Length: 467
Ligand SMILES: Cc1ncc(COP(=O)(O)O)c(C=O)c1O
Image (tube, rainbow, N blue to C red; front, side, top):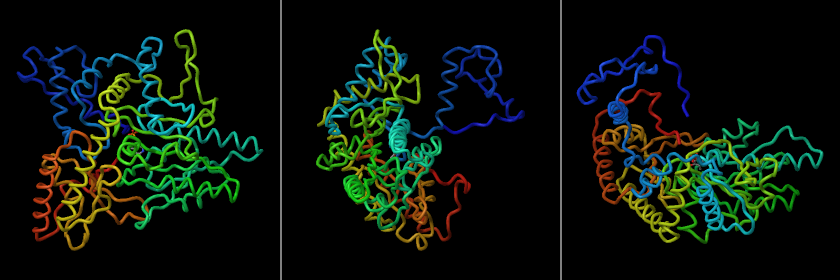
């Protein structure tokens, strides 16, 4: 979460002006913004104040920046409201919520072809799941080094420079060196060859991404595992793989069931996904599954007393809402394999439709077209000749409510600036065509301008990409 500074004395005295009939006539006292009000106010007035502030947020349905679910069926929303008061960690008090979590872990482990006694849990999202996956790799490496009488001073983790920020956090928080494999225009993802080339005796694991945050493309997990098999044959180094399937974990099994990226590959030790992305649940729920007990060191597991017995837990958080897990189970029941497939196929068709229309507009070049995740990224084919940037376009689309981020790629590819559209359930063909029409209008207007447009936002605020 962003860190917020305490406001200074002058701003600290700011008040909410609620002397207006819509807040009720009996709310007479001033309401400080940054200190707790001295007195209560009627619930309707408080509700109105907060709702009014939130009008300024973007419209979640037009948010094509996020991977996170912005629409669920009303029945699912009801179910979540029923569970608002349940704390996921209270396994004694809410044993049936714990049972639903267990069923979800089993459903996901089966979806990902876990061969034997897999183990897993829910989390607040993929970030926590990645932390847990990384910790398991670190603990296993330490045990191996200890057994060999080798140094445990310099663990490293091999991954693409295009990893999501949670992996850089993992490395910084747990003192692991991030070995970031640079991206290149020709191959903007990790390959088997460069993954193996970056491994050494201090490598705790390799992260492969199933669905890049930058452009939605899959990294070649099978090729990476094959190269690491070869590395082991040549050098004896046995490097496990964690698959960050934050988005792809709920897309690939339905759209490309024959793609081997999961526990079908013996080198894959653990996989995470976000239930709140293509798992189709409102935020925040994530999942992580380990292939077997050997992949999850025993001394990371805490035992909590539960219904007279002991329940093993592994988490960074303690308290957490239970509704997301119930909603995940609802989706599994409601949609089944076929329903998930139809939803993801619908998103992919829409992403490909958008990609084809955008490619045909003229000034754009596609980086990805929705063939992996239902995500497309595109750049200006000739930014110099265009006379405007993707940041200008992003800002102008925002005037109509569309939230479409513009951003540059990581080091080595920083000259590439793109717009990215994430298609999710709840986005319709009608909306897609309205978006295309607005995009055409803005491209025409910007193209017709005699001079480079003056940015609507100050320079420091122009990059809209933070997830
Ligand atoms: C590949 C990848 N990993 C991890 C994350 C973090 O996921 P979460 O938002 O569920 O914590 C994201 C988020 O976009 C992602 O795309």
